[in-house]
Length: 171
View (cartoon, rainbow, N blue to C red):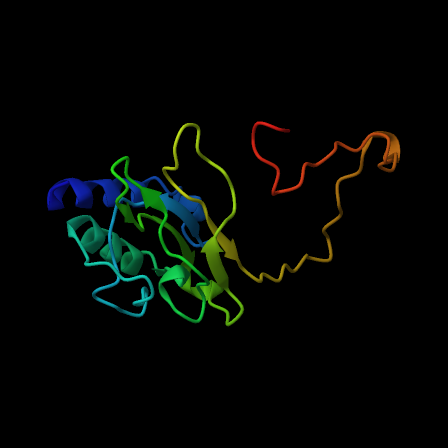
């Protein structure tokens, strides 16, 4: 991608955020096709660093513009391998990211490559997992929605939930 194409992509993505939600803290899961880390800043660190390319430069600026950071690029937050993509030739890169609003920074934020099989014939993208401690405050006027006739949930009506480690073909 050219610098102009990458800038246009990130501008369009920013503009796609509804104006009514722009004051909310963002969490963005993105296949950025961008390489970053060689030019650290307060929004991205050097963990798993790759030479910043043109797409990375535009992504880096977009993170600044939207007050987002990449926890997986900081040693204190990321655990394990950084590779999220494998080319058919076998070459690998980190192209997928989770960006969080800077107001969500917390010492207990953790990222890792999830043990989820997303492949159909060969490995391609690997899922990035984020553990983000969040405290929710409910207003006094909040009341939880009730089931019809105020009927409690019963175990006989519960939908079985497969374990996270179960592969996609088995559930």
